[in-house]
Amino acid sequence: MPVMMRALTDTLNNKRREDAAEQVLLFHIKLAKNEPRFLRRQLVDVVGTMFDIAEDKSLEERTRHLAIEFVLALVEAREKAPGMMKKLPLFTTTCFAVLLNLLLDIKDKPSWHSLEIWYDQAGVTDNYIYGRECLGRFSKALGGKTIAPIELEQLDAYLVVPEWEKRHAALIALSQIAEGSSKVMMKYLEQIVYMVLHAFQDPHPRVRWAAINAVAQFSIDFCPHLQVQYHNLVLPALAAAMDDFQHPRVQAHAALAVSDFCKSNKPETLVPYLDRIFNKQLVLLQVCKYRGHLVTKGRLLLTSLRD
Image (cartoon, rainbow, N blue to C red):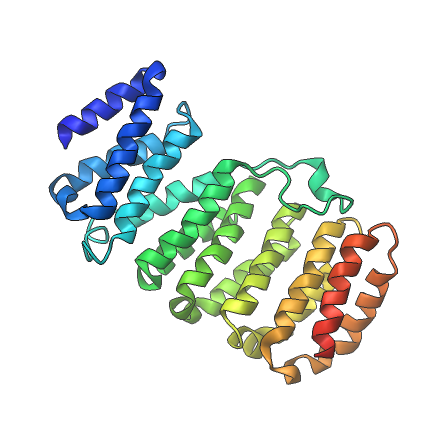
């Protein structure tokens, strides 16, 4: 294995041979899936090399993604090598940071802010899309007990930095990980809710959109606990976001998040807010400029309120 790793890094140092290096990585991925225990003795060096490749921005994206795929293959082979990756020093913290960095590859394109274009992922890259997918896989494979404490520590730090991309990444990561770790994350629910609702006041609209998106995901993953325990915080925050006429995509996503929140089969939590929400939906339905997107969201929400 040390010889194979040297051969891999030597090949990557020769830009004309990066295609050959990809073939070596594909072989290692197959090995990790089928015989993960074979790598046990050299695990520290092998995984360290893969992290170096994943973080090397001078390499092609596909090469970097294959290095990450190798690491995830080892994590997901837990039945063949139980506990092997969890025992690796600092593995969970390092891998989570590597995946989180992929979410930083996003651009704030003007087309995202306009509801004339339905697609709400303008500005995202292949790195971002792959990182988002990997965070969900990583969480499911390692389990909430392992990932939740580390995740919250890193994401809390990301939410207070000046770069909007990091604040956005933290919220997207929260929503991705919740699905695979919801049972364990339940005990951190209060902390998570306050983290996300604080981001509703973020100066950057894409960060506010990500916070609303997280609430929509939580409405499914933490249902009905979120609705029962935090309706007095979540619904007023979403209602206020529906007044953001300067940023119609944020406004429309808030309407959709209310629709998700209302699917909890706990109608008693909604009664105090129905008049306010209903009136806001009527306003959105009358906004002609953004009629296509806002009316769709409005109809979804009114259907949920009716049900």
